[in-house]
Length: 268
Image 1 (spheres, one colour):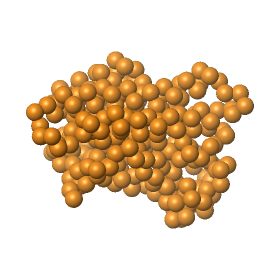
Image 2 (cartoon, helix red, strand yellow):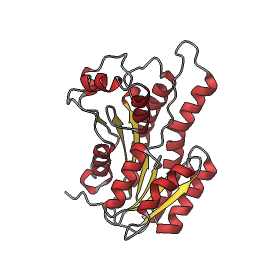
Image 3 (cartoon, helix red, strand yellow):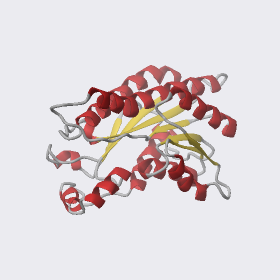
Image 4 (cartoon, helix red, strand yellow):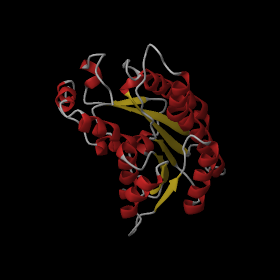
């Protein structure tokens, strides 16, 4: 079993901070060529500047990941820089609280657009390129891997985050459906669902409410909050040839929190 991603070309969205940044850096440090993509240009420039030196093959792309033109330009920029694309990680997430008894439909549509439709559309665009660039390769060659990042909100209802929970659940179903659709083309699609991992959103929440740290730890059987780097290891496995017979799966990385957490707990 090989876990090497040396020489692979990856696009990672949401790469300006938090989990997306951790994944993109992880890939770059292990020999992949990486396009860091995000809508926050200032944060992206700050995050990537240290990684554009030395032997690392790193580029950056700033654009609204929910707009079709930006998606097309992102793929074009990646091909201009690296000639191909082998890996896509949809780590961009848009998190907002919502009133479960008075859900603003515009806000719900924005949640779906940002957290599900954006990743689905980008996956479709990138998958078409993966299929095209594999023409002439052998019948068993692996053509690409896609990973979608979501949270336990997809399976554990959180009243104050109803819109986000719906969007995460839709994203996980899109992962399964796309996995079936792309399996004949030997493109694998999987998801990673997390909780009790130090995302950008969790960092912000802990600043506002430091006491919640102990509550999260108490609700996590393994007794800690994991750094984002630990999630990167799982994503690495899923995009490597070591997982070449794994598709349509949602891998949970939560320290056991989904086994014991009360339904009313905040999930980030």
